[in-house]
Length: 319
Image (tube, rainbow, N blue to C red; front, side):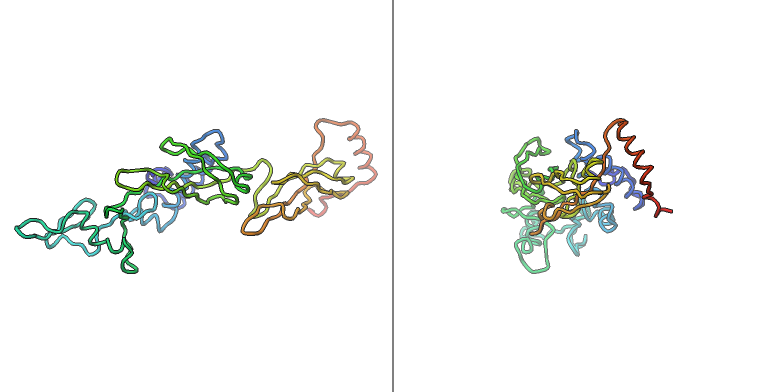
């Protein structure tokens, strides 16, 4: 991943407020919902979020600035604890200090750099003493592991997130895979595909990590486990009442509109929301009175007569 300061376009000396402002502007600009025709928008949006997770957090930002973690938030090697340049020590790249001991015949003992790592961290890497975790990963041959995981983003529809399904994803390497979407997946959750990451000689293949985002629905709005929808109704349906069809994530249902229903009145359809955590949410339907397009002389005449006979002020409470 690129330097998070470069991703957000801010200086290293930028204030927390400047970083927050830059993140908000970029997140809004590159959000997949605003770039539906751009297949790379999701990847840019994920990179912006990842950068903000590092330098938008005070503790992680200080760790990154000190070189303790990398741009992905993973620990960097800082040298061996208690190491010194004395007793034959030599300073290597990145401040790493190492020492050799003279073996029989004046040769250098102690083995290779890999042997040094295994001797110091081998027990911890193989589940040795509790509380002594190794900052290295070791492969089956005892060598230092390589991070071969791949991270991508995938946008699914609301229906796909509820019912599950299969979707094709394109990897940064150009390879494409069919991915099974589990039913009930939530925005921000990750799907891990073992062994589908990058490869390198002498190392097991990495994993593919897919971060899910849910695309906005044309008419449903998600509110926790609940769904909300604005339902257009006619003027005569509002005045006279009647039955109207309401879409749900399943099949449409009929809703009885009482007489004299005002625009903005909300009805609850129990159990028609999202199934999560063993419970199903509700669907909240809010009526919106829609007048016919254009001018209607008969309607205008009727309203004028009705207004003269039955005047009222719905804004009287506003002062």
